[in-house]
Length: 167
Image (cartoon, rainbow, N blue to C red; front, side, top):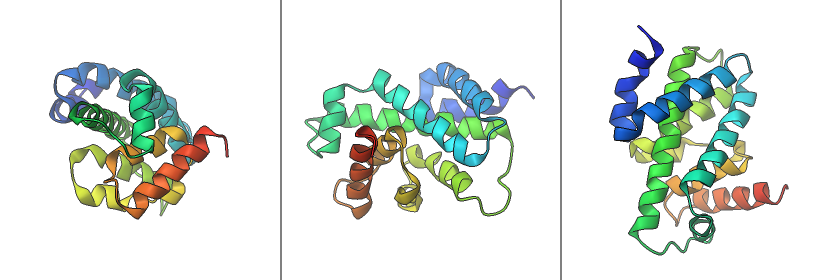
């Protein structure tokens, strides 16, 4: 079975029409991650999320998200699409790697939990450990996926601002 046949059903279900572009992104991400330890894979996925945010999201939307002052349903829909796409690409990339984590690697666990964010399951958001998130891409992904009135949301916002300011 080719890599496209393995990830196509997953991506069609998660992102719809844009599945082919997401499949190419997942293949590139999996190839970039292939020979790296899990902690480095987290950094690579952070970079992917930040690049996607710069393409998919308006800078004002990102700022309003960080301040928890979203204007309308269109901004919420853009953020939901961003979370859905990033998490689906990560899930497909992990599937392409076909490499189970060895032992209790917390970085591998973080990636597997982030891959479930766009599925709409509340437990996925609650399961992500914010203290492992250090880069702006992952912080933004987590911030966009969390309800605005949770402790994890405030922590994700702080991590996002700190990452942007290089702290």
